[in-house]
Image 1 (cartoon, rainbow, N blue to C red):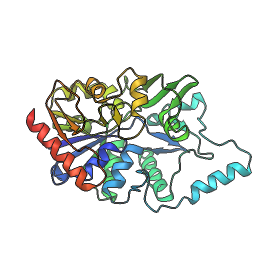
Image 2: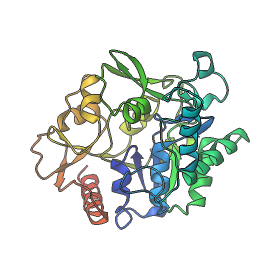
Image 3: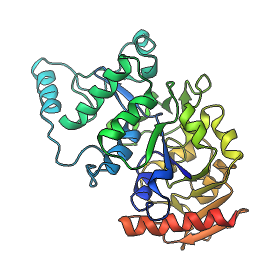
Image 4: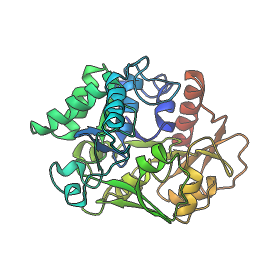
Length: 329
């Protein structure tokens, strides 16, 4: 049995070639929900959906977001209506009082759907409508995620990190930005002064997630701050990781990140943006997988390979390195 912590694109890419090494029927993927948003009344779970769409064979692999060849008629019409009506484009946060009203799971991350700032495809939107409707019927996010996974014929068990709201908020000199506004609308350009995981202290791990953390855990090459950080901020998750075997794949080669905003985010919360900083952020990790070109000297077992993942063969190679790292613990 093996459990993967998934956020962003790093771990989903690793999962693409993990099946020959870690049997899908014995694999659980715990998805980050810290960057979820409620957009136009619909709950969007980007990190959950990346795993969902990739495993279902429909992911747009050029963007690593949404469904391939999806149409965007509804999104374009929302933009047209806003322009025709003279309405300002997004991101448009709902009022402060609305941020803690309605569905608890959407707290602190509610945006208007007027001129939506995230491009949502039509088939993609159907997933969010179904998810939100099932939640409104009384199902838990874990139940809903597993139902959607069945619909996409996912081979692994996909579960959320928590049933409770945790919102990744980036603090900048000009104020607070939800991570999706920071990354999607602002393209990661604002200076990061801190990152807050709002609601994490009051949250609890989902039962299925906590159960899965009793098995061997692999932290893929995801962003340590906004992909893995929200999970670690939920009380009980890091304790569980300390009690099991954990291997982490660095998303850096020394101080060079493969992609994304990880360097700025790590620097903003006081970690060196490097493999050494990742090791400091993951004190619970028993071993690491590093790139062949990464000469970082760590105080824990290390397995090296080419960690760039561009296709399934690359992913399988890194997965085998993870297996070797587990054996070295």
